[in-house]
Amino acid sequence: MRRRRGVSLLHGLLALGLALALPWAGAAEPSEPQEPLTLLIGFAGPLSGGAAGVGRSMQNAVQLALDEANRRGLRVGGKEVRLKLLSQDDRADPAAAEYVARYLVEQHVTAVVGHWTSGTSLAAAPVYHAAGVIQISPSAMSRQLTLLSYPRIFRTIPNNESVGRLAAQYAVGTLGAKTVVAIDDRTPFGAGLADEFAQTVERMGLQMAARYSVSDKTSDFNAALMQARKLRPDLIFFGGLDWQAGVLAKAIKRLKLDARLMASSGTVGLTFLMRAGTDGNGTLVLEPGPPQDKMPGWKSFRQRYNQRFDSNIDLYAVFAYDAAQAIINGIRLAGSTDPDAIALAMHRLRFEGVGGVVAFNEEGDLLHPSYTMYEVQDQHWTPVARFNGLPR
Image (cartoon, rainbow, N blue to C red; front, side):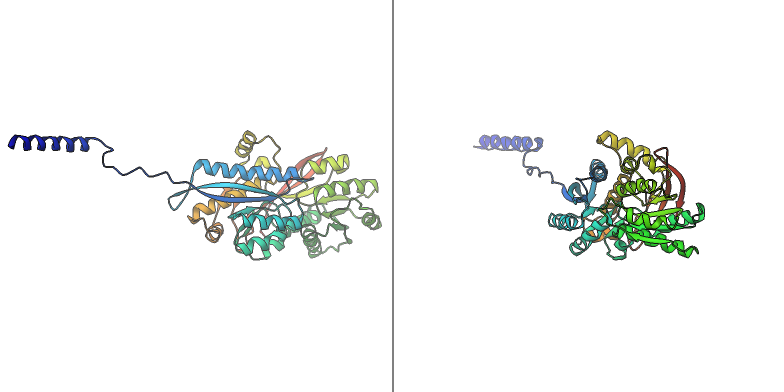
């Protein structure tokens, strides 16, 4: 009996030793890896129609920024966060933009990069504001947008008040214009830009010779130009989109007005050159940011963009990329996925974007905007002057 008890004790000790030697013995089941939290980032802009090239270039730039952030890794509260793009086509139409904004809100986006025009941005802004969604535009310049004083609204380009002011100062102070006429397309962007241009001209002691308005859909400038021709203007300022500016340039030459055309920001690109042809030579445009080859992050951005996408890089793609980076940096700084916390952090941001320093004032406008004056020379856009200015 004593021998049997000893054998049993020995077997028990051996079993215990074996159990201790095996790493999985008695261990808890391994936990499942946690799924990353997905944050939806919206993009809204024209993805069809005549402005589709601009919209797709901006969309690509946002996608590039999100892809890079996902590769680097983004963590909030110790949890991995993945950023996913949800794009919508607003057709550059304010009514469509409001519908798009409601859809993006229903999909629970955290932030939206968009919209392209001031009219679409203003139509969508109340929808995003009511839902607590961040809106950051890479291209809408209307001062009305940031005058809304929504705490989650931003833009990565100057507003049209600063652009109109500097354009007028260049027209009068540098070009020596004496008889100036302004034409606008009645949109918040075009009319607002022409307003500031005209007001600055008059603050400089020069009376505006005339002011005309046309539809933002028209190709007929004859009525305005026939009246303007009697005044013999030496400069015509146009507040409106690039394709109309191209039509206007041809009309000025056809009606034999000896006047230089100064067009709105957003005109630098192929659309104007193709519409205007040789009649566009001499046209001036003040655009946001430095020339692309002078942008601090341009060379690297262009290389990464071209490796990822087989499409042209529109002027505003840079500002769309910087807009997405502002959202990403805001998430990192806030350490939160809550839009209010991210927006608060975005107001504290200061970083070197592709187009220059990105930092916002209390209204969401850029603190340190820069500008470049371009002239069409031999049917090519050529930088002729650079400026730094204040947001308003």
